[in-house]
Length: 409
Image (cartoon, rainbow, N blue to C red; front, side, top):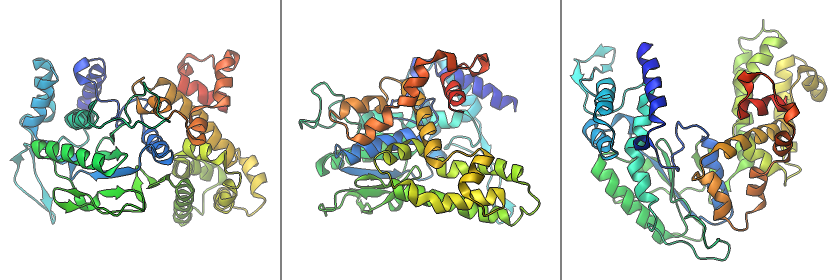
């Protein structure tokens, strides 16, 4: 316990040091970054046709194969102070011993020379630092020529060539030649840093009219029509949000069926708590994107009525009017709830760094499609900002994220 507390304090110190800064396209384990922000960028670029090719990568046992010597070299090149490097090494990869259990039998202890420690607060951060060099190479200015079509501002920043969430990575390109350039950079970095790719789990999305294959280390990358990226079903035209919500609601329904096996003695108050803690998060994942999409699709919510009514019935235990039951239990209708979550998403956008892809997206797309405009503009959030009297007085809730949540209740 003491070790984890100490590592968290050390991690807090990292965030204020220049040598520990990461590329803005890395969203993993960082404040005001999330899987939803990366998914929003990918969807907006594919939907607007600014990007037509996407290669999704799977690094093989990524956290377990980081070479300790190479990691130390990366930290030195980033000008990490020697005393800090010595402290990190003593905590995470100096004189570390492990054993393997197979068929109930433990092996002998052996020294570890690769991999970051499981359960350590520093491990995800160290992995991000290690892989940051790849992001720098892929997104280096001049790596790819800027597209010169009329819907791009002359002073627009380059379209991101790669987005990472820890080791969940995607390469983005506007044509096949750009894809091949990015793959060459990836292969060169992967070989130099001894991190292999699981090519069977990688995927390639491209327009249906293009039939040419792409190769990683001589092996063909599987062509997919749909690929699950960070929990979202992505096609060549962006995220299939209808499929996403339907799938999530079905999963929540199956989980409620499973819980029913042992829920005979539960009262509705206990079921309601279970709903908020275990069921609602399943289908509320990606709510800002779904709310933005639904504003232009009035019948979108009609498709969810049956699944939501099933969950409402599970909570109350009665097959009565779902609208009455929902109001009685204090559960907002799906459209209202998702709009509120979309408003909360504006806090993430507001506090994201200026160089964040989410912030730059408005410049990348000179004539943004309605989806991106609806996602990043929110009247309810603007109303909140203009009405200070609605803000909470409690100092513990003074931060934007918490005060928005209080305002929306």
